[in-house]
Length: 296
Image (cartoon, rainbow, N blue to C red; front, top):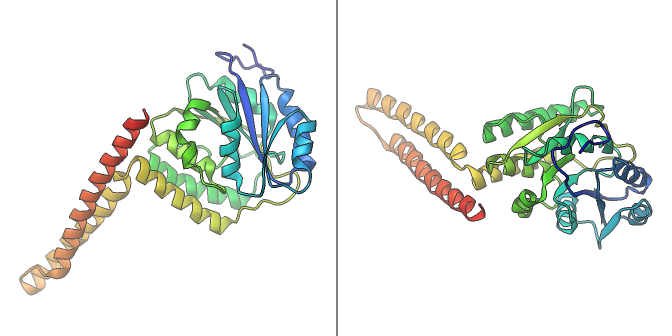
């Protein structure tokens, strides 16, 4: 099958696009029409997260199916609800504010055959905030260390994913922001295949202001990464901690022996702490392994 953009698609997917939206009546109609005009999308599911400006009505007028939240619950919760309502084999997640170009959807789908998720990655040519780019780079460094994999864009909300794999990790989504970080790390650390498709046309919001706070949400992203480590690979956290405490115990014990002729409580406490943490890490790793086997 040949997509509108000239990419050869390895097989035919039924594609559902899920758009969380909060007061996006000014942009959502155009985004939906451009999405349907790609010719590869079977349905657009808009989750209206308690909007007060007629977002749901504008979405339906443009050809989408609207799911309404009675009040604002958050971006992640809306994506979760939209994904459950979607009927396609593949779910494309994208924003309704105009920053994600629907014309790139065929490019994502073209690579989905051998991969389980394809992420639209921002490039140097993308019109995005320099401060946010710097924060994303810092988060990517941490995420790459945690996952042991190269990550081109950790927080992009524009991605295509096979629905059966999405449903495996949907319960992990936070209610507010950070669901892209969650699904990226969950897929990678769960042994799934993830690819990145560079998209120059990703830009800033067309209308309105972002609700993301750089400091608050940076800390939230770090907390999510730690949570993913505990769920999928606890040893990546506990081995360095235990090793550091063991080295400190060795240094402390050596100095104590040199200056006092014996090893005292500080060195012993550090040594025992390193052993306890290593044992806890082994136990947590076994629990994570059993959890993965149960879901496989």
